[in-house]
Image (tube, rainbow over all chains, first blue to last red; front, side, top):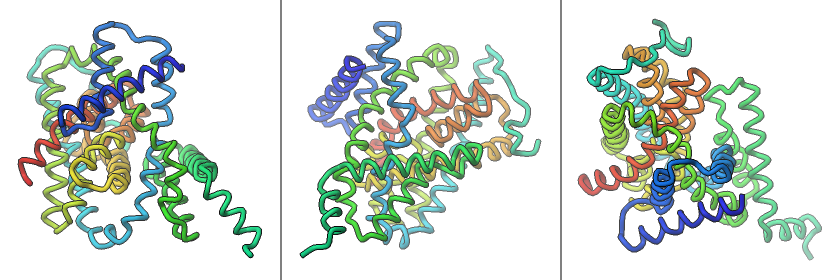
Length: 129
Length: 239
């Protein structure tokens, strides 16, 4: 557990240093994620201790957003002023992104020809057929 | 002379204990409600916890910086958690190899579309630059999105809330949209939800279908990287 956590922190630190040195406009932890991913690809197997530590961190990932999310109290005025623009952008953009991504993926999967995917009927029981 | 209550408050606000405890209690209260609702996407535990704590701060006239002094220990773990996303991504490597082309094309299309459409709509409706920068990475998972928003001059706390709302919207209404555009392939359905609605969408997809869940998790991990690379690039192109 401790060794794995140290390794994860080392990846993050290396990521932060690389960003600092190169001026990449990418968050340090994302570079850390890419480094860890590359290391896993090189070793070609996942370390049991590392996997358990990562799973423990990710199981409660949602909790980690709470302190930052509470910071919304600092922006209540802005939310009031720009509420319409923000809501419209969130709703339209998110739903259109679902549609665009799904249609592009369906189209390219068909183009690949091979490997028929498992096709569901109308999914989720939430929508009509 | 201060009253005993004030003395207790002075003691509590000087240590991280109170803020940490409130954060954990509020989140678990939110999670209990989420479980009781049968994991309904509209009953989001993060949103409930944020509402409880924000209510306490506003009601009690407490500064956010006082709360964050304690809660930053939870916040710090976002970094290591982002690094840890490499592991579920590695587990999906076989699936990536099998449909590499379709995945790459849909990832770039979806990731770019999410950012450009959000910024375009909000900009058209007169949102400020800080809001636009906070909206741009909204479809990426929260720790990544917050980092990107910060580097573009956005407000990371606003981004956190926008990311959560995006996830809730995608998880609750995404399946209806997928039925509307008649996409039936579970791989495409899951991938689209993961690109648009990150972890909140993924947890929803996992409940519905295993293949959709796996592709959604894959899409979330890949979109964290794609957004981190694409959004700053697109931002410089337009601003």
